[in-house]
Image (cartoon, rainbow, N blue to C red):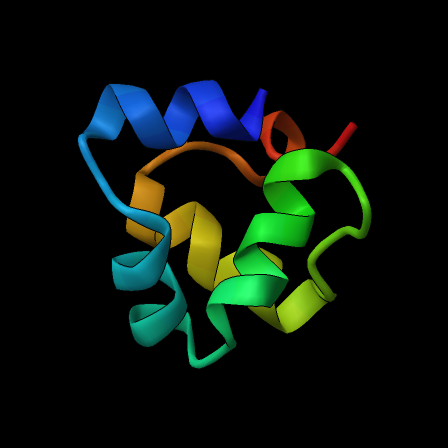
Length: 58
């Protein structure tokens, strides 16, 4: 789901990582479902992608 949203917005994981203040590996883990963003990162991710937080969590 997150992967599709990122792709639809035309963003790269490196860009998202820089904007949110996390590593690219962290963003990659979120995309692959290996981990989930903490609340503070979820808010930033939601704002950056312009989608509700509930759409970003499994």
